[in-house]
Length: 456
Image (cartoon, rainbow, N blue to C red; front, side, top):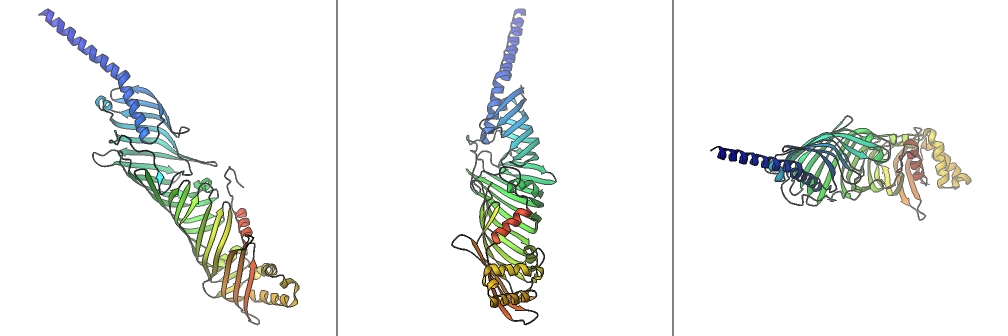
């Protein structure tokens, strides 16, 4: 009896020792390898196949991962990850939760993406359910680096796997006083996703480096990211009540856009109020980061008084409004005009005031006979006297390119003076300095940022 009891004790002890050794082997050797493999696979599913990290501590229920880096030039870095699992789940390749602390994800400020058809990173190659029940981000940073400035946004949020259906994504970020959020669903088996992004009180000054110009104002934005298969579509809307640019104030600004080509932003529509009227453009492609673009601008009911204040530095006055259409090409930071027409919407008044001398110089440049022919000099004087207080029936500016590539602006003014002889007049002058004048104004009234850094 005693011998049997002794053998039972020895057998039980051996079993316990064997189980302990097996557990130790699983804990020290097998489990870390399983967890390491799962962590690598998770980041590979996200398109980051070169993840490197340290396993600091591993138990049957928790694993600590530290100093993780992934992507080119450590695009993603994570100080600490706590992985929760059970032994059987880990062996089966399942993870209960991952808590990520102090992560930094660098995203280039110029999206090298094919915008309405962005080629996405490969989805889960195993075509199996996502092996993680939840991922939580704490004290993380989303970093947008560029030449002149780096934007850092605190980021937190969760990705929760549901028992059936796609996983639920919720992210929150801050950029100074701005609040940003993203919410939606991700099918972690196929990689398909549908995510809505909202930004409130976004300070446009943060994007001066991307736009390479001084800009200020606050905007609200919302966007949609749809991924289906290997294609991602991005669409966004931006609205701002007030934007300051080139020492000018633009109001009721609305932009609809999406990414359509590598490093190109597709502007579906751009609308804004300026000088008492409305400017509209789109669709067109904006090249990033060069800012090169060709657009057709529709002009509706600009206040002639405000336009004259700008071009005459406040010396001329008038009433009425202007509308038209212009072709504009931007080879940043210079503007070039193509064919177009701007004309008055109806009759109005024009008072050149102290700018009459400047207009006389334009007459001389347009037709040298005004300076050397006595009759033309007399006509010149009559024109200038009439334009000191003029009732116009029509003002029309026709823009066209000449054979040598220079821009010709033909300005026609029809009407009569409101004092003196009140003789009907049909005045036409040709002006060739519009582009130079505009680009000089932009250089003087904006701090244009160069691609290589600094300002010019």
